[in-house]
Length: 281
Image 1: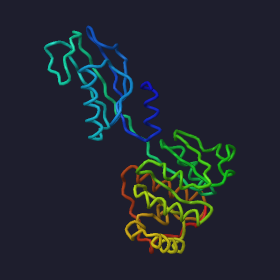
Image 2: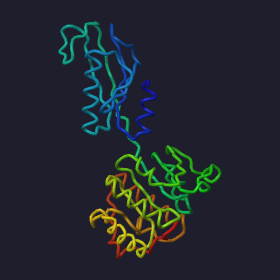
Image 3: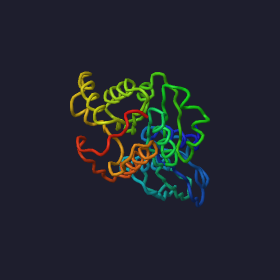
Image 4: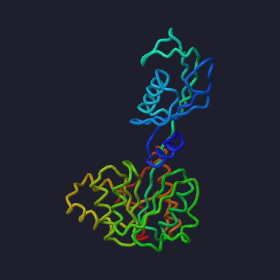
């Protein structure tokens, strides 16, 4: 694939990358200004000319990925027999400036259950730069007419899945998962599947009574206390109170924004939490 398709591919897969662009050329060089390539941790796409120029740019891009760089970097390369190189000589005779731009990943958020709360939450989250997965075992809540107002900067993926845990298994590591289906049995299956993966952040809608029952059942499935306690229930900022779907969605979205921005959310202990959230969407 070319560099443009590679950018879309990395975004879809929630993988980091670096866009490498030849910005200026003086004298002779393998590629013209504007030539681009994309570098990921294990792959590259397209080319800025090969040889020491390209290999050095790939090395620098992968160092940026390892360091978690968020700011662009520039690389000035002389292409003559006197230049110090690490990957062989290039004697084109020119000089090239390369711009390396980190391609930020979009956080992945999956909402399981497009009932009243799920729909309101989807409407809000679709306005954010996310990879948003909307999942339901029923087809009707996912109709195009019903989701017409779920639009915005988010990349929205709609999944009608009679066995929604299959979608959960395909999410990237670190995805934020909200379990709020119409069926408590389905919720339990999803929580169990998420814990078996062990690399997802999971929030479950429900009251303290629902969570108490789920704790017992998840322990019976073989999950230890530390794993079970990693599930957040109830969900949402405790300072945003109310039981209407829109208010719950606002509370959950606000908590998510804090989480993604790295702002700590101070939640009271579960037994001291605010008004219980409804147990079904």
